[in-house]
Length: 94
Image 1 (spheres, helix red, strand yellow):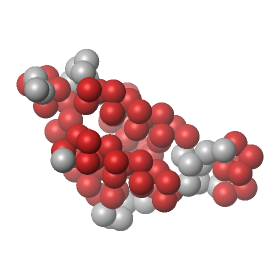
Image 2 (spheres, one colour):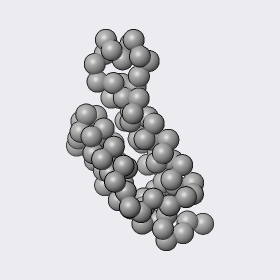
Image 3 (cartoon, helix red, strand yellow):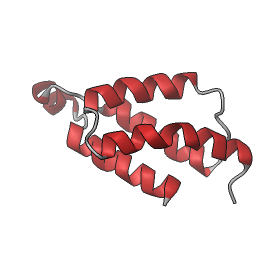
Image 4 (tube, helix red, strand yellow):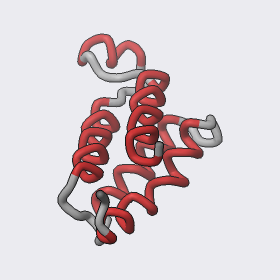
């Protein structure tokens, strides 16, 4: 069961994730917005939801827009990041 702190924490990410999953914003915009939101989140609470958001943080950090550089670093493409975001959304919001 999710506590009120965890619920407050994930609410702030729902719209951002939905916009990215639906293609309303680019992977670059999602990267910027997600990293900013996560780093400044005052509602972070320990629990399964935080673990999902933290895992997505690592995925966002692994996103590399440049295909040539991505090949050298093994980073994620925009589409791979969208798949990871969709998975996180489903685990958080059903």
